[in-house]
Length: 416
Image (cartoon, rainbow, N blue to C red):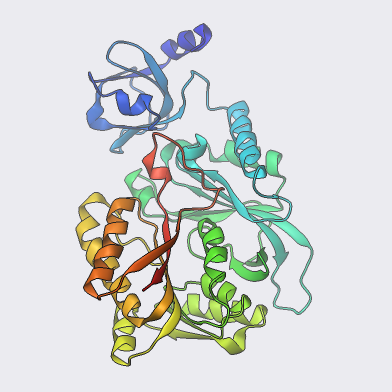
């Protein structure tokens, strides 16, 4: 570290780790828990920038302090820089440069900021490129909108500066906040939503491959659309031509509609949300596949069980459930849930059929996921042949030392 960074870091608030608590931080993890800190100097207020040192007084980084959270310090820098306008502009420029290696931000919707993986703890920013969905045959002009989540106290208190910096770097037509995730409560924050900059339409039409989807930026789940599954949806669609497809936990229809566009003979989409199914049905019509796309409002576990009783058969089944394991303590119960839906899906597949199975829970790690799939196959007397082991798309970067950045599992398998 530069001498001037050491000097500046010693002037402000300081947190010092207990002995032997620094290795995880040195390897790149950005969270410092309350029980890892020996003491804090200077009585920092909530959200303050605090310098972190190990027990031998070696500087480790700088982070946002929250005395109300178990994650006491979220590191945003490994130097002594301040989280000011220059910092945010640099961080956003670097995040955008990474995406531009893989995507065209003038044409493609994408995640621009992925929290800690982009050294911006608790901040999520998705860019949606498309046309206003006014419900008319003629779409409007192409626009650019940002949908943001401020999930930590540090970025919440710097929201105005962040919005100004985003507007300057990305020049969007509007920025909407969707900070409704339960994790905000752990930071001592209430849910918050609304337009922060410019104007934001209710729905926009975005393109994904050869398909078009209507995305609700104000009321859709999370930021409006699950961009992390984009490449996986395209990969699954390669096996859809002529197939009878079952899309379970279909949400707004991403997997199933791309399958129909790729030539599926029939797609049956299942979800428990009436609103999601209505959106999926409209998306099917927008893509000209409404005649081959049908929806069912049902509990997935019950519906899979009923399909098995009816001896229904499919050529391609997609399982994209919500996170069953939201914490370490729920992993074992989640295992039972994941295994049940995978077991029943395998029984519904024709021999040689394709199963696309996903989990978006970090706590349900790859080893457990693969063990669960193998156990399900064994219990129903089938064998699996792995075609692809996939994870989230490149706009959700995976970084070393921060295991939470690799959370999505997607396996494409042939059932023997």
